[in-house]
Amino acid sequence: MGFQSFEEIIRFAIGKEEEAIAFYQEISMLEPYPGTKKTFEDFAGEETKHKAMLEEVLGGKKPSAEYDFKWIPDLKRSDYMVDLEYEKGMPWTDILRLAMKREEKALRLYNELQAKAEKEDFTEVFKMLAQEEAKHKLALETLYDDYMAEQGD
Image 1 (cartoon, rainbow, N blue to C red):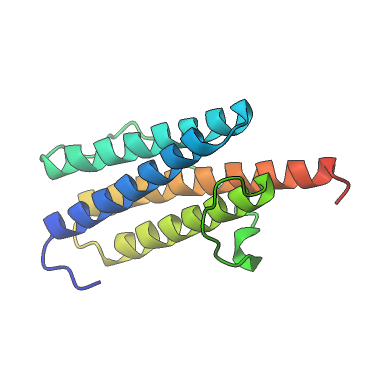
Image 2 (spheres, rainbow, N blue to C red):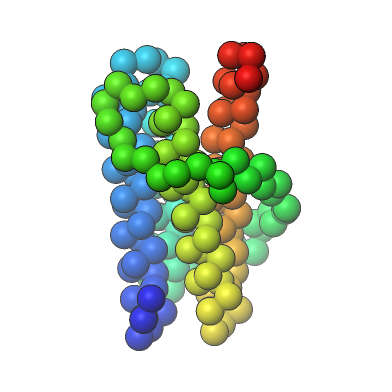
């Protein structure tokens, strides 16, 4: 990633959030099960909030001082899974695996951007977004674990 300015970094991150929104919206529209639809509509909504946060930062707004930073555990399920591509009708477990890998990559991206940020305000933005992606990853890993436990695995 060879960015020349903070604006380029933020625009790149906005593009990644738009990809995530489109991904979750596509799943929610194509999946036949109401529970799957709702789950991924919610994730699309979360990614939309991230995009809005980045757009506010691009417009000069500082990150919220009230943001509640806390440690989010990493179950590391996605660390041992291969990348998949979405296909309509794919099994629930594969959809979860795919989404986990995407969130893992988003978390890694924001951690890298946070480490390279030159100003504290920028560091805070990426730290907030990393925490949000860590929450998504944990939620997906938990859904996966719970489902697999129900299956007797």
